[in-house]
Image (cartoon, rainbow, N blue to C red):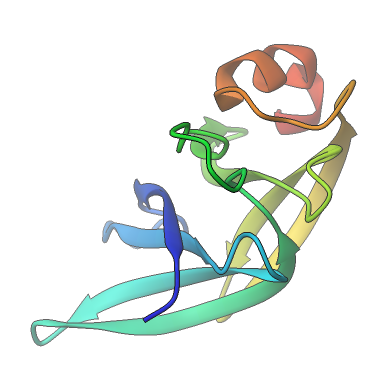
Length: 123
């Protein structure tokens, strides 16, 4: 029973099936996890540590998002300090960081403003 903040749902590996991405415990060593639905249950596909997509006490939940870029969908999620956006791809059963973009000041607002600043990192 720990805090989990959803990143979004999207086809992250091109197989036509949406996966659900979320950061568990974003306030204490957040882990980005990707789940797939199988037989009515969510099964973890991959996980990677070092994320925080929520500020403790804030009502803002939109600090991360799936983004279509370069012919595939990637996840853009702040690092644990919220001073960089990490661009993550699902490759098989592994989450891989493909780029990182510094953010001027700790991210506390919706991801859209950070994406505008980091547009070239997502492509």
